[in-house]
Amino acid sequence: MPDWLEISLRTLLSLIVLFLLTKLLGKRQVSQLSFFEYITGITIGSLAAYISLDLEANWYLGIVSLAVWVLASLGIEFLQLKSKSARNWIDSKATVLIKDGKILEDNMKKERLTTDELLEQLRKRSVFKTADVEFANMEPSGDINVLLKKEHQPLTPAHLGIKVGPEQEPQAVIMDGNIMDEPLATLGLSRQWLQTELEKTGVTVENVYLGQVDSYGQLYVDLYDDQLQVPEPQQKASLLAVLKKCEADLEMFALTTKDQQAKNMYGQCSKQLEKMIQDVKPSLIR
Image (cartoon, rainbow, N blue to C red; front, side):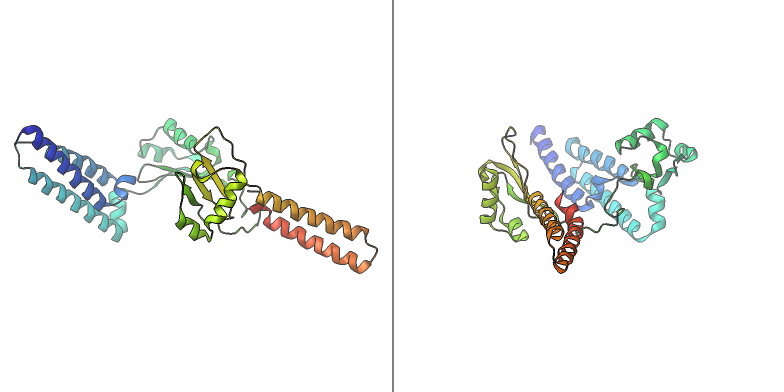
């Protein structure tokens, strides 16, 4: 067999074996690397290159070595799942770099992290002042996670005591100009509904690159032609305007009527409607 053909076949075999073994190791191996996983990744890559190019050695020995490394990695992962002490020893613990706005210099030296590197990581998380940080931890993976002080955190409905309904995942109902029936069925919608919504925006299915329906039943489309502007759905804005008009009408009726009983009834209904508008307004102005 010619050398070039043997190398080609070995490379193809190495690729297939490496792919299967990496799938066996799972997503963690490619998403975040511990010290041991880092070493494993380098070694497995070197062994795959050995299998591909070393024509003087038995190729199957490289596959045996690959299998041993993968099994050792799996054993380490199972050990980490069972033992907290093993996780701490293999992956190490998170290190606090900032506490209550104060940089912990000893921990910075321990992780061999410079001030410039710390500030760079903070800026990536839109934090520009260390004094605004409650905690900043360096995780075993090397990432730095930041918790801002309460006064510097973004305002949420929970801070205002407002309860909001659960947000469902938007469903892609059109993709590459084709209607996706399964997401439509998940939302309890039909093709007829989708065609009606598309007619309101003046586009056809064939012109839509991506169409999504949110948890409030509103359709958002992205067209192939980026020069065309699609109007934003106005159903929620229209509903809010109608509710406010009804509230204003009730207040007007309460002011203009001379019947005291009717005045009280209109006034009470107006206050109830006002409260309802305040409750649903966060959802209608999204």
